[in-house]
Length: 162
Image (cartoon, rainbow, N blue to C red; front, side, top):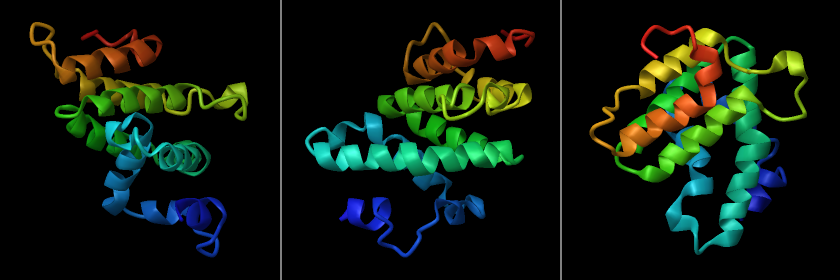
């Protein structure tokens, strides 16, 4: 059903960008981006595959486009939602890392001058959002901090707190 409605255009030209006219559905983007790492979908291989295809072909390109058109705040909002969830659910840590990697290098469909998608200040914002972990307390927040730092270290090297 998901494939028929969303991937085959069964909703009469469903446009993902309409969901992000305001921040009302940021949570939906966060949940969908987490589909690849969601343990509860492990037994539903076909459904998981369809959700991942939807995210990779529809959701991520829309978020990249929004960031390129000056709406990087939407991307930060999605990561903020996911970071809040990552405090309790480890799968969100891996989803954030994968999503931030896409913001650094969205793939070969994008020319080199459009990489990274976010600006340096946006990466610094993501770093500040995730650096609330304390290394002596190795938990999901620490894993999140290390995952994001690993992906964006090059872009925040001049940050004094690093």
